[in-house]
Structure formats: structure tokens, C-alpha cells
Length: 209
Image (cartoon, rainbow, N blue to C red):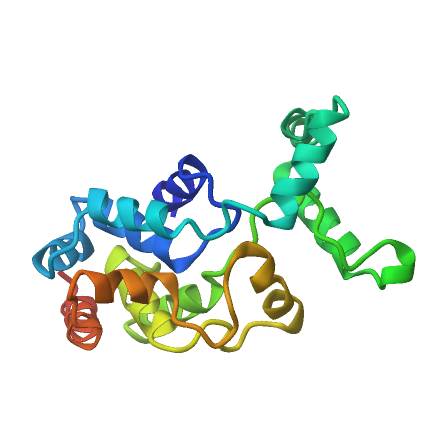
């Protein structure tokens, strides 16, 4: 997860999605998940290049434009966030930003704060991974569980089981409700059989390799 979050930041993505988690998994060469992905024809440079080429969330999103406007006024959003995190903690800052975003429009809400961090679009994938690890009696989800979760999630249209606010925010970061997941498009572009790979990941989870 840390590797995937770092990749999302280095790529300049304004959200954290299943494609970043896929990149983190294929780049973790010590894990069985990376072996399965490599055997299927993927590599970290190839996935990284596909994310750059598709460029979701990089241009025209509200968080980026707000930060740019504030920068022109001499306000360094990154420095403000760093100071607030130092004083209150990153979790408290994100919770406060979410509370503001949930306010009705007449109270200054319905607007994503540039201090709020990246929208996280991997919760459903994580749910699949945790459910599978729990079913196997394992204390934590391994990379193979995460790979299974990513493949299960990206097999459904974008926005499946997302909350109303999250679905409303998708166009802002260059995604569309009902469209294919970027991770699924990356698999298709490289000729990867998603269902076969999902079955392999499931087998790896159950075998405990």
C-alpha cells in the first residue's frame, strides 16, 4: 500500500485508484502477486507508462486548479498542509476536510478542499481482499489478497457501490460512472486475461504461497 501511494504521488495523480495499487503490486518483486502479474505479461515500467499515458486526474481537476489559484495568490497549500499535519496529524486533517465537504452548499460545503488529500478509490478492492483473508483465517491481507481484490473490483463498472458523493466526484478527476476501471483498461491493453489472473490469485491465497 505504501509503495502504491508513493507511486500515485510521484505520478502526480490527484486520486488513489486500483491502477496505482496494481502498480504497487507488480513492483513488489518479492511477492507472489508480482510473479503472477509478470507471468501474465505486465511489468512496473509498462503499468507506470500506461497510467501516465491515460493521465486520469492530472489535468483540469478541481483540487489542482484550486491549489494553482491559491499559489498565484502566494498561498503554498503543500506547506500549509505540512504544518497542519505536524500539529494535528494527517488523519485529523483529512477528517476535517471530509466534514467540510459534506456540509450543504449554503454552509460552504459541496466543495473538495485542496487540503483534503487524494480521493481514495480502492476501498471496495480492499474490502474484497480483507474478506478473503478473513475467510482463510489469516491475520492480515497479503499482496495476493490485494491482487484478488483489485481484479474483483475492476471487473465491475467504475462507481459500483461507491457512495453518492464519491460518484459525483468521479468526473472531477477524469473518470466516468459506468466506464471501465483504468486498471482493467491496462490489463486489456497488455492482453491480460483478467478472469484467469483472478483465479490464479485466488489459488495463491488459498494455498498460502
